[in-house]
Length: 202
Image (tube, rainbow, N blue to C red; front, side, top):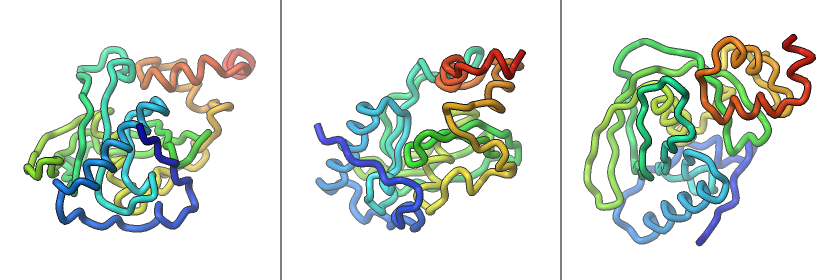
């Protein structure tokens, strides 16, 4: 099992527009996708783009585990999926602000506007062309990872930087969880682990 090192905010590879993959069936692309999956499994995360492992090519690996689906959501788990040379289309103009974290910005979280409904066209490791639609948290995850292919990190999407904070002090996020706990269960656990929450949310 190969676990790759994660590039962090500030490294040039995260600011570049990644190159298209000429041959999706190439052995090195399969190996890269496998390494990215192994890295996600090791870390316990949901998605990763190739630039985050210092490879400036247009490749995304992700999954949606049942434990990450907010209560009351109609989303279904998604098995490990590899997107090669993806293109993204917004199906409508409806947007929502969503709390996000990123492997390349460890220890931070922020709230960025995302489209609720998107369409993804991509190639598979077998070179097949596929198209599917995604909504809500699934759509947010894909927009987040797709941004990495264009050299964009989620703080660059934020409209209110006062909502960018450390995971150890999730004040604004904690206020939202108190009002509406039906968000990403991982973020709810982060709030529940905040030792000062009772003092500030009384």
